[in-house]
Image (tube, rainbow, N blue to C red):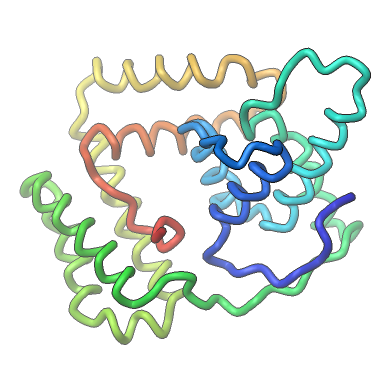
Length: 229
């Protein structure tokens, strides 16, 4: 049975999906892979409703449990990808109920937000002058953090712009051999799931995975409020 409608908080997207997948899989200690996180990012970027993702995960596991022979264990979110997109389409067409959404309140404290952005600024400083403009933007936010804490959605938009600029700058700073290594790692993770996804889904997932890989390569942290944990 699909999850019952319940208030969902805008900034709990990643946490809600991670916990729901672990619950359905029945293994609370299961850690999501870099590919899993990239897939969640691709859903968020495509504005896939959180409700559709949770329903899709539940239905995918119900389908798996109904099989007489279960030779393969569900070891990644990509296994649920097509069902999630089907549920998103059904929701868009009004074929499923849409749960009420809680206001976009912060699931983190002001101090947690300040520490998160301070760490990001420190990492940007370590990256050198090439990240100067992004660092200046983050420090500007920190200077008025109390005000921003009361207006989270505009802050998320501002931080997303800075994050996109940071990723583009980091990508441009990488050599051809480094980018090739990132793509090889992506392919190794993605190969088992290619047949389960459409071309557009794969393209978005590849972008999100490589964005994560590039930031990790440069030891940079995300700026979006979805990663304040």
